[in-house]
Image (cartoon, rainbow, N blue to C red; front, side, top):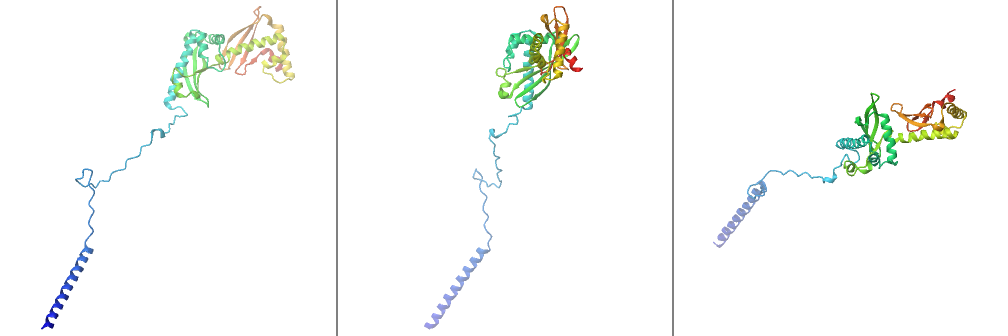
Length: 306
């Protein structure tokens, strides 16, 4: 009896154990077979609704000073136009002083030049313009071109007028040193302006060369005469040309009473012309060629050509 009860109890325990183990095995399988839970999207800043939008990255901004200015060393198109406007204004200032025959104002405008231009020097410049043109009041300024080198911005103009009823044109330049900077060049109160023209840079000195040549003729200074004529070789040809000139002057004109009279400027040949006139109204013409300031004297060339 007792044994039968014990067997029933053992059987019941085994059954409960099997049932429990089966339940555990089923739970583990369900857990392995179930799909992973989806992660809920993050809520937006309001904390109410989820947002699936991906925010775009904000482009980084370069600092303003990192931008390279292409006109830092060369003038931009706007600056080139500004140079034309500025140089036209400065050119008109020079022309206005010229028309007024104001040598003091002209000397002041030329103050920044490398060579000193006194009022007396500008009187010579004025003389050259009066010889080259009939009327200073009718002169006009025409822009031609701009260029530059390592040191200067160069604005090229032509001064236009008339002589004996014919149109005449004279080269004229307005220049600015790059070292002063574009800001100063464009500032009326700060820029430094340079002017150039054959009648400014050469004419005052050309007259002096002719006067020195006449003095060398008076003194029969053969070495000085050869240098004025551009004959630098001490040879038979140079000696013959100088001797011929001295002989011709002695026969044809009174050097003791000679006056030097400026006649004009040949823009095409780039030569200044002068007339020597003595007290007997005997005359002879000389020319000075270009920047070399070489005397061109037909009386000296006669013997050299033979």
